Every structure is written in C-alpha cells, then in structure tokens.
Image 1 (cartoon, rainbow, N blue to C red):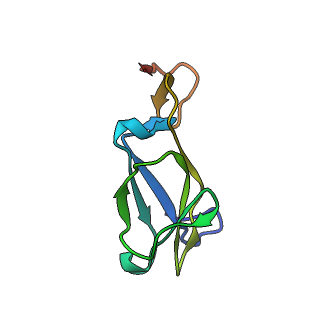
Image 2 (image 1 turned 120 degrees about the vertical axis):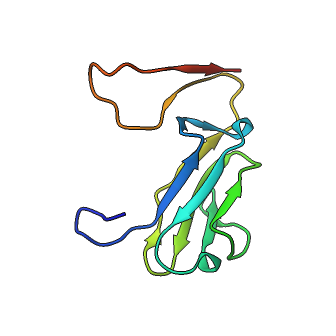
Image 3 (image 1 turned 45 degrees about the horizontal axis):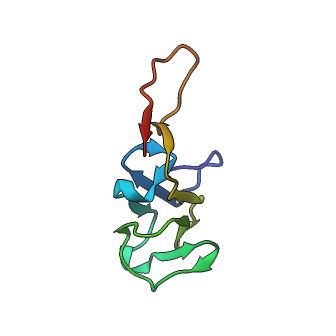
Length: 106
C-alpha cells in the first residue's frame, strides 16, 4: 500500500471484515509491508509483544495491536474488544445512501 506521499507503508489487516473487531470472533491479524515476514515485530497496548516472527496470528486477548516491518515502519493501531454486546458494521468505506448490513452480537 502507498501513502499519500507515494512511499510504502505497513498495514495491519483484520479478518473478519467487521468493525469493531471482537476477540470472540476468531480475529486474524496480518501484517503487510516490505521485508521478510520473519522480521515482523508485534506490539500490544504500546509494548513490544512476543518475539519477531510470523506476519499472521489469531488473536486470543483483547487489546490494541500494531506491527512493525523494517522497511516500511509501524502500522496503524487496531483495537480488539472483548465487550459483551457489540454492534458491528462492515469494515469498509461507506457513503451516504449506501445500504449497510449491521451485525449485533452478544
């Protein structure tokens, strides 16, 4: 992915594509950026978390995550919630007039 200035940036992808993401939804985080996946560094709640390693994992704890790839830097933060009741929307850009499917989970 390119930033507005045209340089590559690190992205943190979330599956499934619902927002907010919730821990009990078997969320998978994938770090995308330049360099080898073994060079991915993960952060949870602002602290280095685990060791350098895979570019993908299934979340087992709520928190705020981000990843770092040596050539493209830190990704934006992604929060994974563990709330008891959540109203979710598709994680995509929406425009006025779009039909939207909402998902209420408890």
